[in-house]
Image: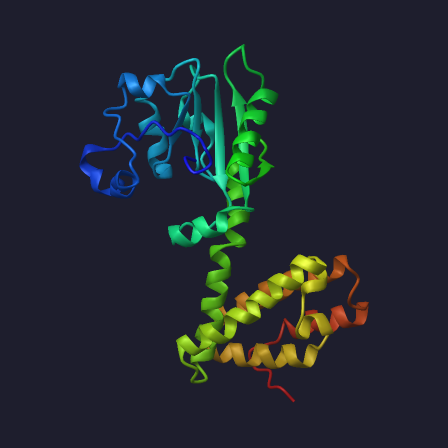
Length: 280
């Protein structure tokens, strides 16, 4: 925010967790004291950037002012948990980027989208005004605004998770299968990452359905049966995951009519392979 030209007044920290704010201190930000401090009441924008399960309890101790805008950066927590009815508006501002590695996130943040929900609380501000404020904020920090409907944050956040950490889980599953055939985990990661990158690039340029590749996209039921047989030797959870992913690929391909009815039927049959089946 400061790099974008905004004035950052400072931060309010739990006295028992001041060490967590050392990075902020190193950047020259100052502590404002307790939540009821006059300095906090004077600022225009108040960001509640605590863990989701603490947004409610922390926000209850803030003496919101009519001129203030209350914000949190949670993806799933509803704005009602800010208890900011005395503030002019409440805004959910959720950058769609991975922050497990903050330094990497900062490099990737510009150009990312941000999930935004707005609620106006005071007569002098309309919801359209609050949305304009949030959109301007997004543009200031080079983010693309994406509007979230009220009451839908949890579902929105679950979907975002599929596009982020769920991908990591799928790569972990792929690496686990490769370990069964003697491939080192580090080698697996180095080999799989370009494959994932290629799939994402194909999706970016061609859309979802046309980015699907492999035996499902080719209608190759014989290879799918081989996959199923090999996975059954690993265990039922591996087989079930493969089936669920493959079925979603089939549904996606159906939207683009990339498979004939016969190919789709044969693939569905291959995915129902019985435990005692042996490949030809």
